[in-house]
Amino acid sequence: MKEKHRLSQLSFRQKLILTSIACLVIPALGMLYITNVYSKLIIREHSLEKSTQSLRIVQSQIDVIFEEMVSVSNFVHFDPEIKTLLEDAKTNPVAARNLTSRLEQVAGDTIDLRITLLDKEGHAYSDYSFYDYDPRQFLKRRWFSTLEQLPPYDTLFMGAEDNYLTSLQAEQPYIFMTARALREETTAAPYAYLIVSRSEASIRERFASMEEDVYLLDEEENILSNRNQELIGTSFDQLLPVDELVFPDIVKFKGQNQLLLELPLKFARWRLISVAPYEQLTERLNGINRTGLIIQTIFAVSFLFALTVLLRRFTKPVLVLGKAARRVEDGDLMVRSGIRGADEIGSLGHSFDNMLDRVQLMLRQVETEQELKRQAEIAMLQAQINPHFLFNVLSSIRLKLLMKQDEENAAIVGSLSAMLRASFSSREEFVSIASELDFTKQYMELMRFTMRYPTEYAVHVDKELLLETVPRFILQPIIENAYKHGFLQSGGRVVITIGLVQSRLTITIEDNGTGMEEHTLAALLQHIRQKDAELGALSADGTPVAESAHGIGLINVYQRLKLIYGERFEMNIESIHGLRTTVQLIMPVKRIGADNHDL
Image 1 (tube, rainbow, N blue to C red):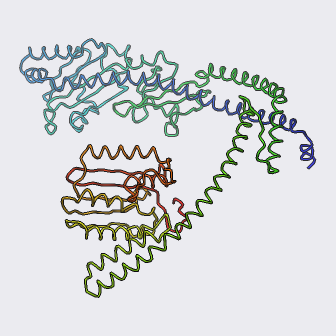
Image 2 (cartoon, rainbow, N blue to C red; image 1 turned 90 degrees about the vertical axis):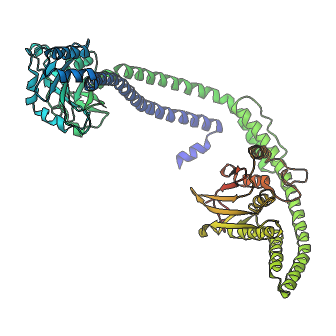
Image 3 (cartoon, one colour; image 1 turned 90 degrees about the horizontal axis):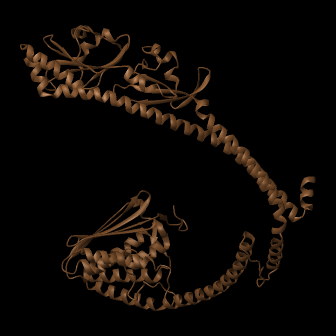
């Protein structure tokens, strides 16, 4: 309580200065904290992006190596010359030498690429010397029996295999191999087997210049390549438990925080894992971040001092504005602050004076609107006197027609009477869909009587929507266009469909009349767009500009619904000349008794 009393004893200027200091210091501390947190996140994302880019480069290079091996396999598989030489080599030594030369040509300038071709009869052909390795030894390897089980044209990938060429085992101890069973057709038995190999060093050398420690793993988490050759062939789980890792992540490894990344290769479900020392990657960025925090602190203190000095100069216009506000509170609406300037207080004074001007204007408008409303109510009461006489006459005519057993004309007179009664008696802006449909059906019954050619109609509506409300008289003007323009030369059919589409009320009116030509439809749509720009305009007597003396037209329906629903309303018009015309109204759902609030 004492603190509250002390605050109440402070002057406005003191309160403003203390509040301003608090409002500056507290957010500044919060911003420094948030900046530090987000800077660390940004540094982490930057390091992650940098490491990912490096790993993607290696990924693309390794994919190229394996793609080259697959391309060589495909070339040998589908080269007709090799296939012919393979068949002739069984009996012709010259063909065998030519086949060996052909394999050497396919290997090309890739020094560590080796190609081996084995036929079903046990003959072997390669681009290397049989003194280094007898290719027929491949037949005894465990994986060779699985080649025939592979799908046609599929390739078996093998990594971390011992180099089968004895002359290269010391320099290149490990190799990667692909193997494939060659078939003429997908269902035929293999006629030969193709083995392509490359040195593991061709992949390992991609890791040499990287800051990150990159591991190539197979689907069983075995290390296939790493710049530390001693790890090749061992399980990566011995270093880090892969099943417990989430990529990307920062984990403790080798006594340091390490950034882990993972990228898959295109082939064999192999993948690359990058392990990078996080502090080493972020050391420079962390230094920049610390410098930035120090600079922000210095600026915050400087701004605090400047704010304290300048507030004393800026508070005088506020006092003037406060005095003007108190006079307005006492009922003096003629007072004006007279405060002007380019700063916020000048803008506030200008807005305050403009607000008083608008308040006085609105008071005058309210008085005028109340007077106009009173005159409109009197005119409405007067307008209801004459229709009673008309209803009585129509009822008498209908009764006489019924007495003469002229039920058809009696029904027409009844429909006309009901339509007129609905038009004159209802004051509600919104009616239920059931009421709107009843009015529309009566109109179509009358039009069927007046039309030269026979017409019919159909209504499809979900029963649960009958109590939803829509603005009055939105269907009749559209249907009137169908009868006036679509059914002039022949009869037709009007179909009204009402339903919910994505929680929005959708009303579709479709007729099979003559339709509109493309230029006519384009002109109509252009006219609607022009009228859309005039929604706020009023005529001299206060009625909408688009409303005519003959009733509400299609354009007016659009304007009414646009004024009521705004951007939530859509009207779609489609027409095919000689076939049909479709008008679709899409609007929010309103329920009866809900005070016309959108659901």
